[in-house]
Length: 212
Image 1: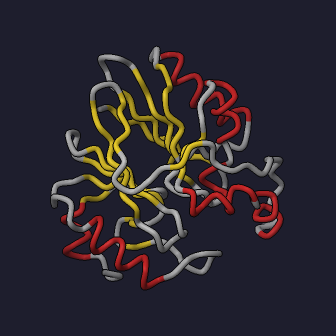
Image 2: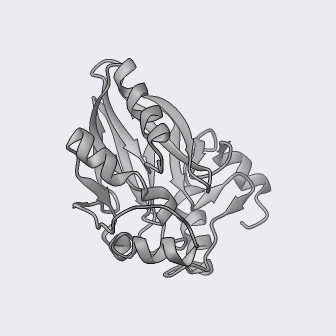
Image 3: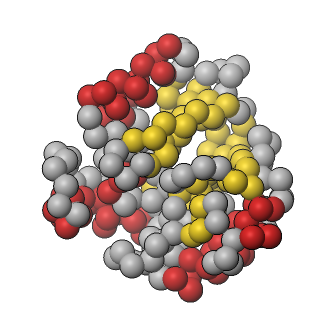
């Protein structure tokens, strides 16, 4: 599996495109675009590389991770896939935009297809495993690609940190338990691709993350 990262919007969200180099099937994870320039950055990349998007995946539905959902859904005819516990966040998107005093025009929207813990999503011939990691939000999930040795953690786990838990549905003890039991159990060599900031590894976070 190949992965490219794009950094979008005022929150510096990491949007990922995963693709199988043989079939050219692709997944777009956490589309955070808020401007025509950001939309062109990702759609142009997909076009230049001849990719065929087959999945739109949200690790969770906080506003910064879903600003670009409707653009991707409409451009590529994809369903919005996320954990149902986060559906309320998407459906109150405009309220969240007002709360953060942002000038972003974006519609409320829920998910189309639910993701569940333990589910396997195929991109070409490679499986992507859905791991439930609630705490940052009730429906946060990680996306683990065991054959390629990486995991997309959303805002559950960062390099040297974990996600905030002061937003609706957040719970610190739940998040620490989720990360410890569900993510730190992965092989130490697993590369962590977080929702913000640089990559790390499970082994590094086991050894030095002060929140764990």
